[in-house]
Length: 478
Image 1 (cartoon, helix red, strand yellow):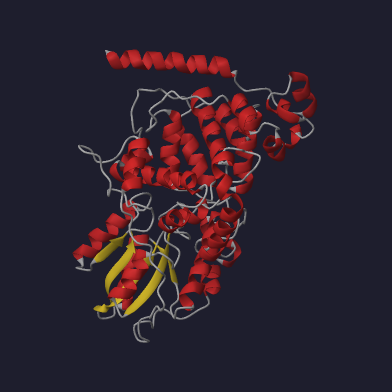
Image 2: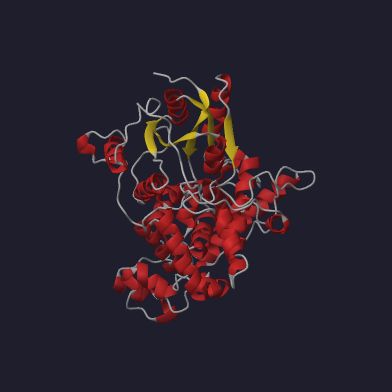
């Protein structure tokens, strides 16, 4: 039953901002209304298939942590499931909310957010969209005569010179609606709610029956854990970041990307906190890349699946070669190590992501969309804008000024894993091959250790790729 609507009650919908620190939507809801109901909706219209990455486990950790933080301030988190916009409006009606606050997410959440705004407008229910997913909101910086920056260097200069919004402290208190308004929201331990939604299939849980699994393959989620890990990493590795960030075996990168993609950490707060520290400038530049891709996708939503720059390339869909790439048995050790790391951990080093993406699109000439989909299915840090547009950057259909950039997997392996430790960590067949020789074992060694020969000859594959480019370029000039 609907409760009488009142402006003194706000519905705060958490999306990709699962934190209390530097959360503009939370701050605005608390400041603008006497009472606030915090809500998270598990979207049953989203991808609820099997989750081999453990991304669901990371999300549930993050929700538990958020609920704890809200309870410390007198509030709590309500979790519902269903078609996202339907459920948000249903809860708003049940609690009598006079306004809705949430983080603006023009990336993966744009479609459902626009639907909510359209339907809420018809009900004369205001929806306030706040920054919080990126450092600088998409659309804030635009070049003269264009909707978005197409070149990273120009965007980085504008981004660095821009005035960033202030970092916000978490609220001291979150006051829930009164007892009557909350009659439909009993104060249950969040674990009971999550178990009801995500329990094993045998107990009839609605999301579990859709195939969601709760395997853990990454660090625990949540604002507290993300903050702890960032602080620890920065103390130990930030100063050396520029020199070691591409070192595959060192594994000295921050690994905070899942905390950023889920909003357990504020990109804005991270940027301001590290920018002036030794090594901070190089690290914060990576946050600028993240913002860059988000502003591209906000201006060109079709770039999720369409070439950002159509260069007339004709891809193939070789099932056997693509399967070998997915399974880490291409015969190129650094490619196979990276793909096995992805399958095992739900994570892959950024340098390795570029190597395997180049191999799929340039050596195998396979459509970048197949690779991007595979990454999205496994990465704990899956972020639609960053994933799709990084893939396009490597494939030559995106924002790279050098669309024909090629990563030679053997050369890349020797350069960024010089003693072979990264390969031996993930390709146990090659554990006895010492030093840089692991990046190109001879045929006898491969046979003896049960490691496959290369599925393509790199030089021949790239020659064929370049020949196709010449044909496409000639076709474009007609």
